[in-house]
Image (tube, rainbow, N blue to C red; front, side, top):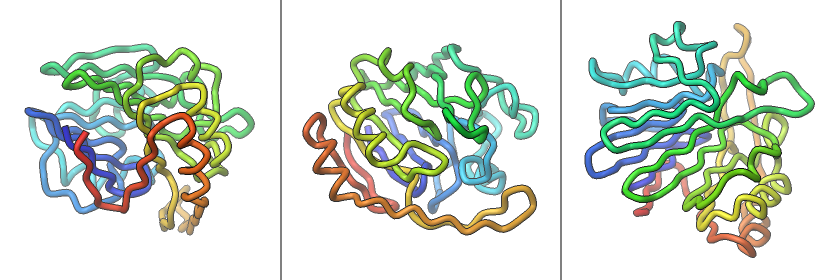
Length: 216
Protein backbone atom coordinates (compact mmCIF):
# COMPACT_ATOMS: atom_id res chain seq x y z
CA UNK A 1 0.00 0.00 0.00
CA UNK A 2 1.14 3.55 -0.73
CA UNK A 3 -0.06 6.67 1.08
CA UNK A 4 0.43 10.11 -0.46
CA UNK A 5 -0.24 13.39 1.29
CA UNK A 6 -1.65 15.72 -1.34
CA UNK A 7 -1.60 18.65 1.08
CA UNK A 8 -3.97 20.07 3.72
CA UNK A 9 -6.30 17.14 4.49
CA UNK A 10 -6.24 15.49 1.06
CA UNK A 11 -4.90 11.97 0.63
CA UNK A 12 -4.29 9.35 -2.02
CA UNK A 13 -4.25 5.71 -0.90
CA UNK A 14 -3.12 3.12 -3.42
CA UNK A 15 -3.79 -0.53 -2.66
CA UNK A 16 -2.97 -3.45 -4.92
CA UNK A 17 -6.15 -2.92 -6.91
CA UNK A 18 -7.79 0.34 -5.77
CA UNK A 19 -7.15 4.06 -6.07
CA UNK A 20 -8.73 5.85 -3.09
CA UNK A 21 -8.89 9.61 -2.61
CA UNK A 22 -9.90 11.18 0.69
CA UNK A 23 -11.22 14.75 0.88
CA UNK A 24 -10.16 15.87 -2.61
CA UNK A 25 -8.91 19.45 -2.55
CA UNK A 26 -5.14 19.77 -2.83
CA UNK A 27 -2.48 18.20 -4.98
CA UNK A 28 -1.53 17.19 -8.49
CA UNK A 29 -3.90 14.35 -9.31
CA UNK A 30 -3.34 12.20 -12.37
CA UNK A 31 -4.95 8.86 -11.52
CA UNK A 32 -8.69 8.32 -11.67
CA UNK A 33 -10.37 7.17 -8.49
CA UNK A 34 -12.09 3.89 -7.73
CA UNK A 35 -13.29 5.26 -4.39
CA UNK A 36 -13.60 8.83 -3.11
CA UNK A 37 -14.39 9.58 0.53
CA UNK A 38 -15.63 13.08 1.37
CA UNK A 39 -15.99 13.93 5.06
CA UNK A 40 -18.01 17.13 4.58
CA UNK A 41 -18.74 19.83 2.02
CA UNK A 42 -16.34 22.62 2.97
CA UNK A 43 -14.35 23.68 -0.11
CA UNK A 44 -11.04 22.81 1.55
CA UNK A 45 -12.21 19.20 1.75
CA UNK A 46 -14.42 18.84 -1.30
CA UNK A 47 -13.32 20.92 -4.26
CA UNK A 48 -15.80 20.16 -7.04
CA UNK A 49 -13.21 20.78 -9.77
CA UNK A 50 -10.77 18.40 -8.12
CA UNK A 51 -13.54 15.84 -7.69
CA UNK A 52 -14.36 16.11 -11.40
CA UNK A 53 -10.70 15.51 -12.31
CA UNK A 54 -10.46 12.23 -10.44
CA UNK A 55 -13.94 10.89 -11.13
CA UNK A 56 -14.81 8.28 -13.74
CA UNK A 57 -18.11 6.58 -14.52
CA UNK A 58 -17.47 3.72 -12.11
CA UNK A 59 -16.09 5.81 -9.22
CA UNK A 60 -17.83 5.28 -5.88
CA UNK A 61 -18.15 8.59 -4.04
CA UNK A 62 -19.26 8.36 -0.40
CA UNK A 63 -20.21 11.35 1.74
CA UNK A 64 -22.69 12.18 4.53
CA UNK A 65 -26.32 12.31 3.38
CA UNK A 66 -26.49 16.04 4.13
CA UNK A 67 -24.17 16.68 1.18
CA UNK A 68 -24.66 13.68 -1.11
CA UNK A 69 -27.04 15.26 -3.63
CA UNK A 70 -24.78 18.28 -4.08
CA UNK A 71 -21.96 16.16 -5.51
CA UNK A 72 -23.95 13.23 -6.91
CA UNK A 73 -22.57 10.88 -4.26
CA UNK A 74 -23.85 7.96 -2.23
CA UNK A 75 -24.99 8.74 1.31
CA UNK A 76 -22.66 7.46 3.99
CA UNK A 77 -23.43 8.55 7.53
CA UNK A 78 -21.87 8.01 10.95
CA UNK A 79 -22.00 4.34 11.91
CA UNK A 80 -22.50 3.03 8.38
CA UNK A 81 -20.11 0.49 6.90
CA UNK A 82 -19.35 -0.53 3.32
CA UNK A 83 -17.09 -3.04 1.66
CA UNK A 84 -15.97 -2.31 -1.89
CA UNK A 85 -13.87 -5.04 -3.52
CA UNK A 86 -12.09 -5.93 -0.30
CA UNK A 87 -11.76 -2.38 1.04
CA UNK A 88 -13.78 -1.93 4.23
CA UNK A 89 -14.90 1.59 5.13
CA UNK A 90 -16.74 2.89 8.18
CA UNK A 91 -17.98 6.43 8.80
CA UNK A 92 -17.08 7.63 12.29
CA UNK A 93 -17.84 10.81 14.26
CA UNK A 94 -15.96 14.05 13.58
CA UNK A 95 -17.16 17.30 15.14
CA UNK A 96 -16.36 20.48 17.02
CA UNK A 97 -17.18 20.88 20.67
CA UNK A 98 -17.62 24.66 20.94
CA UNK A 99 -18.21 25.96 17.41
CA UNK A 100 -20.83 24.89 14.83
CA UNK A 101 -18.46 24.43 11.88
CA UNK A 102 -18.44 20.64 12.11
CA UNK A 103 -21.51 19.08 13.63
CA UNK A 104 -21.96 15.88 15.58
CA UNK A 105 -23.95 13.29 13.67
CA UNK A 106 -23.52 15.10 10.35
CA UNK A 107 -19.84 15.30 9.39
CA UNK A 108 -17.66 12.20 9.43
CA UNK A 109 -14.21 10.79 9.69
CA UNK A 110 -13.37 7.41 8.18
CA UNK A 111 -11.93 4.06 9.13
CA UNK A 112 -10.40 2.37 6.11
CA UNK A 113 -9.28 -1.25 6.21
CA UNK A 114 -7.26 -2.55 3.27
CA UNK A 115 -4.53 -5.15 2.88
CA UNK A 116 -4.80 -5.97 6.57
CA UNK A 117 -4.08 -2.39 7.66
CA UNK A 118 -6.43 -0.07 9.57
CA UNK A 119 -6.28 3.64 8.75
CA UNK A 120 -8.11 6.31 10.74
CA UNK A 121 -8.78 9.56 8.89
CA UNK A 122 -9.97 11.93 11.59
CA UNK A 123 -11.18 14.71 9.26
CA UNK A 124 -12.09 18.04 10.88
CA UNK A 125 -12.63 17.26 14.52
CA UNK A 126 -11.80 18.26 18.04
CA UNK A 127 -10.59 15.76 20.60
CA UNK A 128 -13.80 13.75 21.09
CA UNK A 129 -14.83 10.93 23.39
CA UNK A 130 -15.53 8.54 20.51
CA UNK A 131 -11.79 8.30 19.85
CA UNK A 132 -11.50 6.08 22.92
CA UNK A 133 -13.49 3.42 21.06
CA UNK A 134 -10.95 3.10 18.24
CA UNK A 135 -8.87 -0.05 18.37
CA UNK A 136 -5.95 -1.55 16.47
CA UNK A 137 -5.22 1.53 14.37
CA UNK A 138 -2.13 1.10 12.24
CA UNK A 139 -2.11 4.66 10.88
CA UNK A 140 -3.86 7.77 12.20
CA UNK A 141 -4.17 10.87 10.02
CA UNK A 142 -4.82 13.66 12.51
CA UNK A 143 -5.47 17.40 12.12
CA UNK A 144 -3.20 19.62 14.19
CA UNK A 145 -3.87 23.12 12.88
CA UNK A 146 -6.29 24.33 15.54
CA UNK A 147 -9.17 26.83 15.13
CA UNK A 148 -11.48 24.52 13.15
CA UNK A 149 -9.92 21.30 14.45
CA UNK A 150 -7.97 20.15 17.46
CA UNK A 151 -4.64 21.85 17.88
CA UNK A 152 -1.20 20.32 18.37
CA UNK A 153 -1.72 19.46 22.03
CA UNK A 154 -5.18 18.06 21.31
CA UNK A 155 -3.70 15.85 18.61
CA UNK A 156 -1.02 14.62 21.02
CA UNK A 157 -3.76 13.68 23.48
CA UNK A 158 -5.60 11.90 20.65
CA UNK A 159 -2.48 9.87 19.93
CA UNK A 160 -2.27 8.91 23.61
CA UNK A 161 -5.91 7.76 23.51
CA UNK A 162 -5.93 5.99 20.15
CA UNK A 163 -2.43 4.54 20.39
CA UNK A 164 -1.88 4.08 16.66
CA UNK A 165 1.30 2.45 15.45
CA UNK A 166 1.98 5.43 13.18
CA UNK A 167 0.58 8.95 13.04
CA UNK A 168 0.85 11.59 10.31
CA UNK A 169 -0.26 15.19 10.99
CA UNK A 170 -2.47 17.04 8.51
CA UNK A 171 -4.72 20.09 8.11
CA UNK A 172 -1.98 22.68 8.36
CA UNK A 173 -0.22 25.01 5.96
CA UNK A 174 -1.51 27.91 3.87
CA UNK A 175 -4.60 27.92 1.67
CA UNK A 176 -6.85 30.41 -0.11
CA UNK A 177 -10.45 29.30 -0.53
CA UNK A 178 -13.92 30.72 -1.04
CA UNK A 179 -16.20 30.33 1.98
CA UNK A 180 -19.74 31.66 1.74
CA UNK A 181 -18.91 33.45 -1.48
CA UNK A 182 -16.01 35.33 0.11
CA UNK A 183 -12.28 34.69 -0.32
CA UNK A 184 -10.55 33.48 2.82
CA UNK A 185 -6.82 33.21 3.49
CA UNK A 186 -5.93 30.61 6.11
CA UNK A 187 -2.55 29.95 7.69
CA UNK A 188 -1.96 27.18 10.20
CA UNK A 189 1.71 26.81 11.13
CA UNK A 190 2.05 24.40 14.05
CA UNK A 191 5.46 23.39 15.35
CA UNK A 192 5.91 20.05 13.62
CA UNK A 193 9.08 19.21 15.55
CA UNK A 194 7.19 19.74 18.81
CA UNK A 195 4.38 17.48 17.62
CA UNK A 196 6.86 14.78 16.59
CA UNK A 197 8.62 14.96 19.96
CA UNK A 198 5.42 14.78 22.01
CA UNK A 199 3.45 12.27 19.93
CA UNK A 200 6.59 10.21 19.35
CA UNK A 201 6.41 9.00 22.93
CA UNK A 202 3.37 6.91 21.95
CA UNK A 203 3.55 6.30 18.19
CA UNK A 204 5.91 6.49 15.26
CA UNK A 205 5.49 9.97 13.78
CA UNK A 206 5.92 10.64 10.09
CA UNK A 207 5.81 14.24 8.87
CA UNK A 208 5.32 14.32 5.12
CA UNK A 209 6.06 17.00 2.59
CA UNK A 210 3.20 17.94 0.30
CA UNK A 211 3.12 15.37 -2.51
CA UNK A 212 5.26 12.84 -0.64
CA UNK A 213 4.54 9.10 -0.74
CA UNK A 214 5.23 6.51 1.91
CA UNK A 215 5.05 2.74 1.59
CA UNK A 216 2.83 1.41 4.32
